[in-house]
Length: 59
Image 1: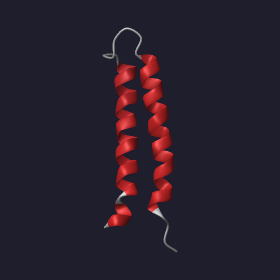
Image 2: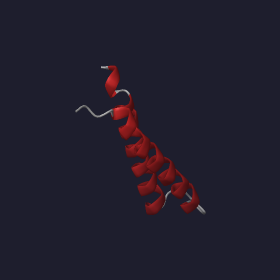
Image 3: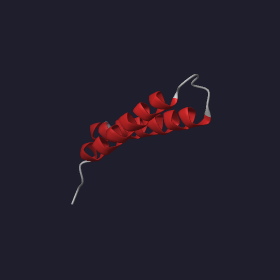
Image 4: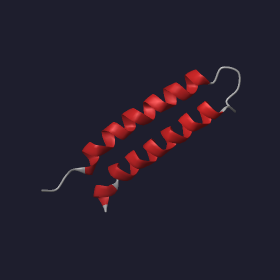
């Protein structure tokens, strides 16, 4: 039974959006604090994983 990787990319897009929102909310005075950078890194990882899964079926 083959699973559709495009379906699995949706939760990663949702998590990436949530982490981006939280990173924007945590940047009060400056973006150079640990929580903002960590949340932005998690969002970048989630968006990268979602894009990789989204385009995996093109191969």
